Image (tube, rainbow, N blue to C red):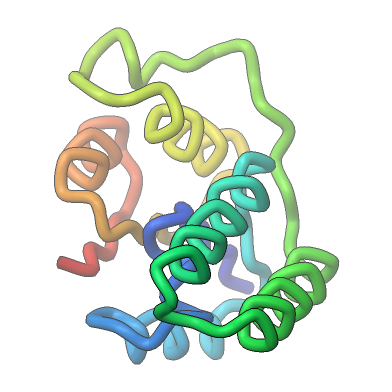
Length: 134
C-alpha cells in the first residue's frame, strides 16, 4: 500500500497540462490511496476560475475540470484540519502550505508531492519523503 499526498500546487497538474503533469499522473497510478488536505477543493477551483477569467480555458472546459475534480475527491482520503500546525513554528510558510504539510503528517503519507520549493524544504525538515515538481 502507498498513500501519496498531494498539495494543491501538485494535484492541479492532474487537470491542467503543465510542467510536472506526467509526474503527477505517474504518482496517481502508483498510489493505492491519494491523500489531500480539505482545503484542496477551494484552492483548485480558484485556479480553474482564474484560468477561465484569463480565457485560458472555456466555460465548458471549466465545467469538465470541476466535474473531474469532484469525482476524484470522492475517491481520495481528505484530512480534517488539525489544531497542530507545527510546520508554521519552524519554517517561513504561508498558512495553507503548513496545512498541507500537517495533513500529510497526520495521514502518515508515504510521499508528499508539491510544486512549491519552500514547502518542499519545510516538508523535508518535518521528516516527510518529498517529491518536488519544480
